[in-house]
Image 1: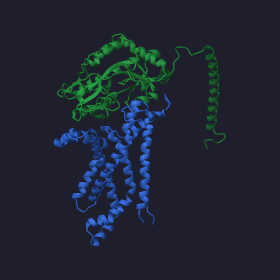
Image 2: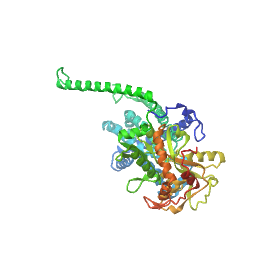
Image 3: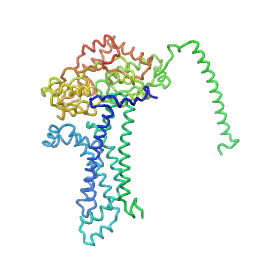
Image 4: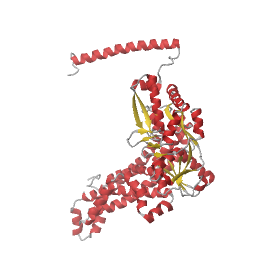
Length: 247
Length: 322
């Protein structure tokens, strides 16, 4: 099938940039992927939770605001959003934008842009999970809490959210896995994450098949690890009588 | 029901299968006979088709890989047609293939490729030949084979006219952008280590994004093949604001890519290129693409014919520089 057979020794040859072997080179990308994904996930989780909660609050103003956020961030393609964050935003914010472009090292610019873009995008999706988790509880628990004399913040903190988060652990896991895979878009603004490094490996050694196979395995390793951890979390967190729990 | 014992359908299937079995048997005899004959007479006759040419003949079509925005080598013009210096040359090859196979109506399939997929697509047979701006180097020669060189570039810098940057030493402490995976990226990283220039190197996704990075002020210089820099400059809003400077850091030979070990096809391709270069055809193409207004904007790249290109046109060869 192949003109030249697969050559796995390629990973032990020195990388073009003098950083060590190509294996080390790929693992450096692996580290950037992990860093970017984790930071973006933290941002997504925090913002997503806030937006998700305000979409379930009584009144009109805050829920509408939340809905607008969600529709904007989940309806614009991720690649377009990244382009807007990296190329357009610094041009339309005069002072801060110029400082960002000239004052920061390119690597920091790429990481910050990647985290913000991926974080805000995923937050819209997390918000929807949180909202549906809260709505899944029905109005009874909310009403009961208020009737007991708890204020709204206490009802959310003590009753609604602890159960809602437990219900949505499986879907949040999917979102986290998506975040890891979506982090590959950062390669388009030059961040040397895993998919970029594998492309570079292909470019400089012309061993494309080996590069693609290796990158598939590495993404597989991250995602399977996350999956196993999430299963464990699900088991620990589940409540009797709810999704995933035993009666 | 369908396969009941006496069903006419079943019978006809059986008859068909048996007929085929007989035919296969005949083919086998013929094949054995042919092998014996070949054993006696030695190698197959010289004009027998093998490899890519045979594939083209059997398929009735040739698949040509081209680039989408390698100006002025291979790109889409304003009418969405593939044009460029490399495209003109590969169409000469297509004409030669038509003549050789005596197939004037040979179908030509144009398939856009990227720098990431061009080698796998050659290897798996999706395209038969790639003609764009692909550097012939020793690493790639282990995977694919290259035609005679069609163009030789030097790697230089594109900078803003009033930036004060004249040559590579002026890049000290500056941000420099390169396109990921290019030879320029390797060279600039080496230079950074050896000369201690403390540059910040940005590797952008493609040439267009590299130039955008330069234009947005994130980088002070953009290092790439001089011909491609001229092409990027031609796309700028004000091409006059940008200049190409610096001592060329490396030479690179562009060639067409084919499957490895297919001497018959390579010979035909090389002959075509050599004929164009030693006659005045290639030089006319050079003038057309590098010294006259080109689509889509009617800009002139104004890149003079270098001595090394003159040398190449005099004595065509397929040597790689690295």
